[in-house]
Length: 529
Image 1 (tube, rainbow, N blue to C red):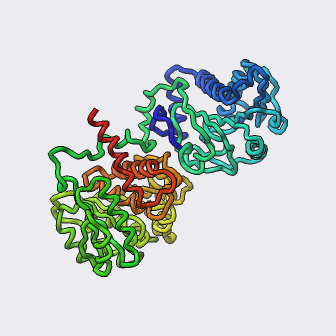
Image 2: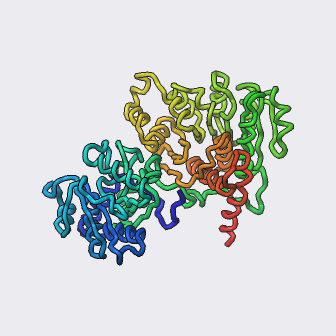
Image 3: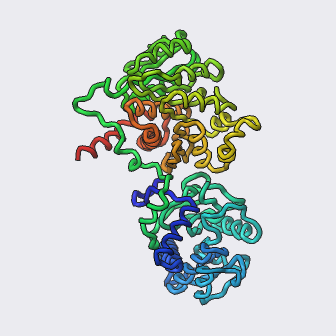
């Protein structure tokens, strides 16, 4: 899903959005005004989806819940009725149960208020779902569940659209999870800022096209809220993206060391190495077991090779401070040998002459399965910038701890078991003291200080064997150029997706690095304007 650049990058949790509303009302703008603006915006979107039906008596079904989301629905109904549409409106609760601005909106509605099951949906040209907003955190039950099931069956059968108010009813705005059942919207109209649930799966799938509208909330509220979650876009990291300089040379662009596995699994390291080189590292070396040296030497040209048969060899290679980024994990194999190599890479240096960063992927992570505190200790003692790049399976294995292991980290233990990908990534970053790239179509990058980004534009053909190896290498290549770890991780994820979009369908992992130059050229050209 490519979002328009006009959509702001800040993401607000439902709690933060409630704070934005409260601050706005406290500044003198009544909540009813915000509700009227929201309802008018949704009505405008609905009319756009029904071209030509106004003059021919277009019919709309509106489903309103018991809170302010339902109040927005009443305002939508008023606008559509005033424009000549035939509106059938249902309310989940009794009118007497409504409170505040929602109650006022219902009082202003001049039409009938029906039970959900009595709404004339079958005859409708469009439906409005204003049952629950982004703050939903419990499963949908009863009449609401039945209504959503009915709406979904209707839109699948008729191909007529549902417009969701704020977020598809049934989606948790914080996590993107389906709470029992959720509306399958063609359009979602939300207000002031997107919520994480608009981008995290599966919520993103239910949203359809997203429209963000201004309803009168001042940007000044962000100073108080200080959001730490963002859409992963160049605006977050572009000013730190390494740019080649006229007076520069390869030694000034860093030296990435990529560790290889044994003879039977050498391809992953070459994918990572090529990713690092294309991302701009001045030099890249594959550190390989002796038995795989000839394979790498025959396949590599600009990438160098060095023999590395164990932790002692790795330590010797790392005595050269110019090797300032290490990428390890792809194809290395799971077990004590890989774990020992990770320990060697993370070994603290008494007086480092140059900072060194480490990327841990795949087998390097799984070799610590069930023992994240051991890894956390090694990272803390290393003094290095560390980036971990697990997919959900690797993440689950790493944190599959026995009861009591995290007794001194109770809050982290709860968050690591959360159904929120964002919360899990943040908890892991804080516990391990490392930047986490929790991969997927909705890749989350989280830093130990709480900052996080969510990717929203990865093409589906990026899900191919070896893609993650390339990503690990690209991040390593950016780190080699001294890009800060969080920004390097965010940039690596974005560039990885952009390169895949550049190539298009039919992509295989080998295509990703070679599709990166035109993407990077656009950044270089923009700095020369």
